[in-house]
Image (cartoon, rainbow, N blue to C red; front, side, top):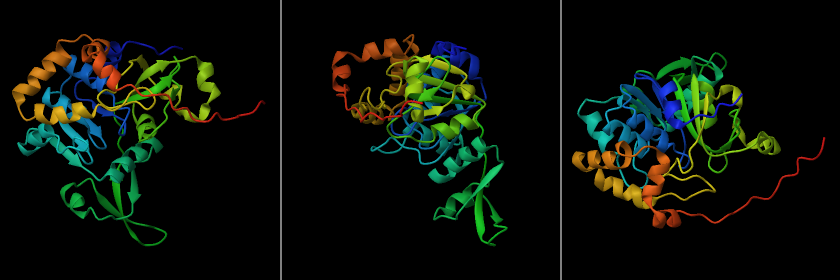
Length: 300
């Protein structure tokens, strides 16, 4: 059964005030368009979970959508701190739980496996355990070694951008792969945004790229260029210029509010956003084809 719907409908139907929301993606495939739609719909009191929060979480916090953030390292990649998130945390207006990268991934892995927690080897990040009571210790019943544990994370909704999916929700990703699969299996609802919706035969022709099967996907939204200013491998490049610009914009709340008005509130959808970026930006972010070698699955 087709799960294709507009992004506006998917956010309205599956993201509710107070939800734990995990917008996945690592380096590329960050679902900025979905974040902007959450802002546009004035969702409130969200608990934003993510390993390595990107600019989209800075924008969601600036728009007043979040009451808490669950994260590992938070920053504007290659630039510095996420200014809004840092300011809100330091002012006591934004609750937070901080983990190491591996601990965040361990949390969603436990959620995906239906386990209440998972153990880890102790690492050098002992100060995190002192600051975050969610870190606990257990003794291995086989070796007697002390292990660190973190609880499972089961978001209310995961939002995942990908290169392509079929109408049923079978979703394929290539390039750098982060924790998208684990997050999808751990979450109660999954919204997938894609550059292309393709025939089921295309998905079946290369099944090893399918990270999310249809039975865990709630909605499929066709949103080309969804990841800008992040990138989507094979479709468009990372807009490094914007990451530098955001660092300057976020120095001033007035500038942030003006940016949100111009680029989110006064725009109907992401297609209009992409058009507004203009032909020069489109050309600058264009990537030439670089195809992998075909794989012979054989006939059976």
